[in-house]
Structure formats: structure tokens, C-alpha cells
Amino acid sequence: METFLGIDYPTLWYLVVGLLFSGYAILEGFDYGAGSWHLFLKKDLSRRIAINAIGPIWDANQVWLIIGGGALFAGFPVMYATMLSAMYIPFMLFLMLLVLRSSAIKFRSAEEMLWWRKTWDIIYFVSNVLISFLLGVVLGNVLQGFEIGHEFSYHGGMFLSFLSPYAIMVGLTTLSIFMTQGAIFLLLKTEGRLHARLTFLLKKGMIFFIISFSITSLYTLIFIPGVTDNFKETPVFFVLPLLAFLAVANVPRLVSMKKYGHALVFSSLTMAFLLMLVAFQLYPTLLPSTIHPDHSVTIYNAASSQKSLGIMLTIVVIGSPLLAGYFFFLYKTFYGKVKLDDTSY
Image 1 (cartoon, rainbow, N blue to C red):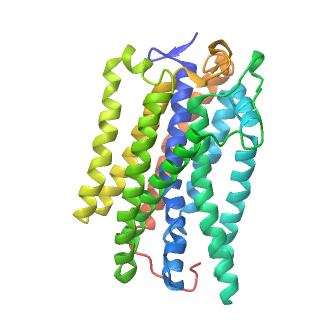
Image 2 (cartoon, rainbow, N blue to C red):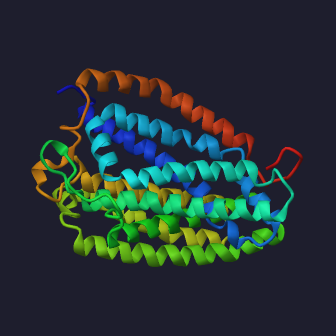
């Protein structure tokens, strides 16, 4: 098996896919989180400002989803096919909600009628909440495993089988961390009475996250089998949960000091460390089988050919600096408080 810097190609591609979806969770996370507060903002002007805070960047942030999905399909086609079979309904709902969310952003302020704006406000709020929740539900199902049988065929149910108690807990935790991230981002982009309102909402969001995260973590340690096996084999990686805890603890401290930029960095690091925990916990498994471990989808039995992975890794090396440069330019250009004008949503 071919390697680069002593790491085999499937493992490298596992890291690439993980990095792409981490970027998506962090950048689109505060977009979804900002939208999940939408109906908590009472005034029409406040809602317009909140939408325009993400206005220049929300569609660019979705690039991470497109690239991540493409990378997953190209690198691990077996995993892509098996997971879509198991999670068909959540993914179809997810795509439908993405369309509704985008439509709400574009159409909400196109007309002055009160009923028009209220309708799109509700659609925008519900779509952001459900997208955040469904992303967590999918992650929860991956962690607890699927009924995967011979030749990676899915033997589980389709209708609502994905809504197990654990998946719901992970979904609520994902929603809570996105809402915390979104409130911090909006605090960076707003001022005046809206800023004061968001300060109050952020406190509620952090309480929501701490409670849901604590319950989900405790359930994971007690009821999800093998969750600490990789950490016992490689104790040095116990630094990951420690770093995640420190990052979580640092967010309220920075918020109380009104250092919202630093708080956003540490809330993003919280998500990054938590996703690293998931990745290390599963490795080298991609989709655990609850029927028999031999039927699990791994990075080795699901990967494309060595030649394909090698070519794609070369493209990643070339494309990564371009992507990083684009997002640096984008966020630098639209840095600062929101100011509404004739071109605003």
C-alpha cells in the first residue's frame, strides 16, 4: 500500500474528508446558528440585520459541503452508497431544507407585505433549526452504528428508524453548539439594542449547549460500546477531550470579557476538537455494523484505488492554498458591523 510521509493513502483521505466536513461544520455552523435565533428577534429591522450579517458569506460557506460530499464520494464510494441507503430520508429532508433556507434569504425582503415577511421568517427559522438537528442526527447514527450486513447491504428500517434516542440527543447538542456559535458571530456584526438582545440570547444558548453536551457525553461513555478503545490503545490522544473541555470552558469567560472574536475562535475549536474525537474514536471504521464487526465499512474496504487516491491527494495539495486564500479574502472584505443599504437583503 502506497504511503506519503509514512501515512497510507486511505488514512490521508480520511483526514482530508474530516477536515472538509470540519470546515463546513464551523463556517456553516454559525450561519445555521444565526438563523436558529431568527424568531427570537422581534423587530423586522433586527431580523434584516441578522440575515445580512451572513448575507455575503452563507453561499460561499456551502462550498465546504459540496467539496466534502464530492471528496467522500470520490475517496470512499462504498461508504457514500451505504450511508445514503441508511440515511435516505434525513438527506432528502436536508436537501429540501437547504432549498427552502436559500429561498427565504433571497425572497424574505423582496416584498413589503407583513404576511410575506412573516411566512419567510418562519421558513427561515424552521429550516435552520431542522438542518442543524438533522446533521447531528446523522452523526449520532454513525456513532452508534447501522444494521450493515454482507457486502455492505443495509438491513435496517427506513421510516423514522434514524430517530433513536441517542441520535436525537446528538441532534440537540449539534443545534445548541450551532446556536452558540451563531449568537457569538452576530454579536461581532451588530451594535445597539440588537447587540444587547443577542448578549441575553447567547447566555441561554450556552446553558442549552452545556446541558445537552453533558447529557450526550455521559450517555456516550456509558451506552456506546468501544467508545474509549482507541484512546486506551493510544493514551496520548486523551489530550483531545482535555482540549475540548478547555475550549468549552473558555467560551463563557471570553464572552463575559466581551472578547467576541476570541470567543468565536474557541467555540470553533470546540467543534474541531469534538469532531477530532469522533474521527479518532471511529478510525479506521467509517460506518460500524451492529450486526457483526466484520461487516463494518472501513477506510480500507471502502476506498477507491491507490492510483485514484494519489491523484486526488495531488489535487488537494494544489487546491488547498487557493481555497484558503479565497476565504481569507472573503472574510477580510466583509469584516465589520452590518450596515443596511439598497443592495441588502
